[in-house]
Image (cartoon, rainbow, N blue to C red; front, side, top):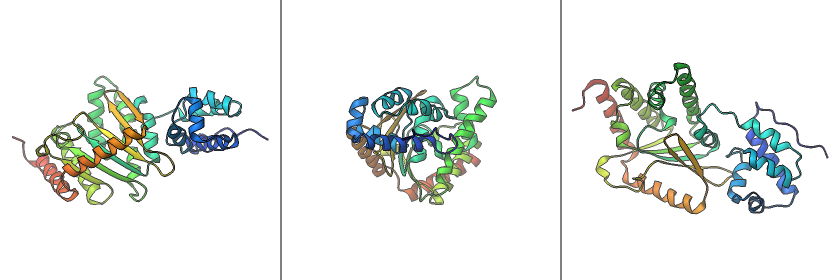
Length: 279
């Protein structure tokens, strides 16, 4: 039987690798959990690879070629998925985000990337990289703004974000940049392209005081969590952790202002930034 074909990098290589992995696994008569045990990963991880929600890493590609008798197919072709226009710590999460059917996120310190404007994103990247050339910032901003294409059809993706009031109060870039950014978030919410809630300071202590969290659900793969720190990021698929953080996000949404009241606050703050000095 002829071996698998090389991937065409222009045509969803991760999805093609995932389909080939599913085929090779089933040909061997292995369940996802059984193959996961061989690779010392969870069955959920194998399911995410097969669904294209996670990137194939070289170490796993080599093991799969041996265990599934696929020659060097995965070893050769996993490099087709390794290139990314996003920062290294976020690249795999961005790829998973593009496959998600629902994203729920708590953003404590800055506006979520999918809702940022170019000027706001540039201010964030400039703060991260104070000596970077403008051309590098251009690439980073373009990559971030391009992600928002996911919101063009809200029936394909449910985006539900809870934004802490702190993210709205911190002047990022300038007052003009903040006015434009909050007008944009309000417009996205007002056009029903996303569900946006604001967690006000008056809510007091809440369920995610220790940081941000993003939960991604997929049609044909188990859910993924993404945790992000300064220059670092981590994907997590442990079922118990996913259940706990899903509950956390539910509690945050319950503590936040309603979408309607949040929209009013966003519009009021945008006007405030545009016309009135804060005390």
